Image 1 (cartoon, one colour):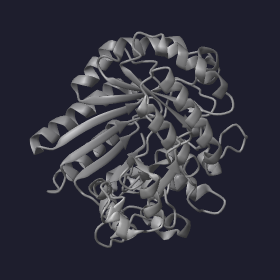
Image 2: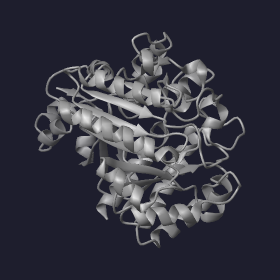
Image 3: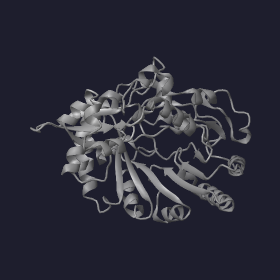
Image 4: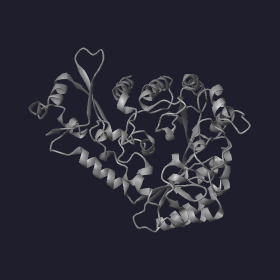
Length: 434
């Protein structure tokens, strides 16, 4: 018998009879145990564990194993297998660098744009050729396409034409295709949403940055006009056709407006049809911490996100903040994943688009990838001692590779679960109890 290295234990506050929570970051199992079982697990009292009435549940949740297992080695093997899997192609396409917004914090403002700002007929054909070649591989079963930019809806006709052609190619090969989109939502009409839905678009991520006042200071048109009212109206008109995830970028400039924003969403007739989530505004060039001092570093954000999550749940909003293990946390470090710029140059990461020092090749000639691709495929938390010995490694997966590359020590930047896991678990437990 062996006890998992990824168990977390915490005592429930105000419970007289000594109840504890047990959580496993590898399986995401969460349960309630009594003090005698807690003591047995912490003290490795196998004589008690082998006869306890909870044994079957402990085994099922992989809190304990009946036979010795090297969990770290098992995860590393799954990490490698997933990184080099060939059954799913992840393709992120930027139809254009152009955007109708001039957001104050957009990371693309930090990169040097070069080449065509919208993709040409030749680049579109090169993308289709690449997809066709990929589909001829016998192992490929699924193509996942994410449309982003710039603002992809500025090139709506080109996007839907490519979607139609990819779908037709996939149908001929009996391959599944799924589409998602990241859009600012300003140009998302009901007619366009219906077309995208019929072509297989499953989800659109749209950003709203706090209440109307704060949003309209940050996410503005080129003429500095605010965009809040139009985006809200577009969400209302389209959310019954396509699932919409509303993201809020959180930093010092808007954090105090987010409760008012949540109250506003609760008053909308579409509140049950959308999901919301919060993410830290991030300066990737500064290794995840803004050089201007407006962004929250991960440790500081760990408390902010928990507070926002708690408020959202209490207001009845559709939100989830519960950890989940993924063998490979980021597509940028996976072999069968690329980001195609509108000029045809290839990146591995969304956050480096437009930056020529990170390009790894061109869509017209992916046989000869630049050696810079090896940097991404060499990134592994299993090579870093602080990650190998970390109890939340299954949840973090080494974090954002780009943050690590740009950080001062070139080491992975710890995620918020490193700092708020116990509080997050306790809150989820009490929510489930209610």
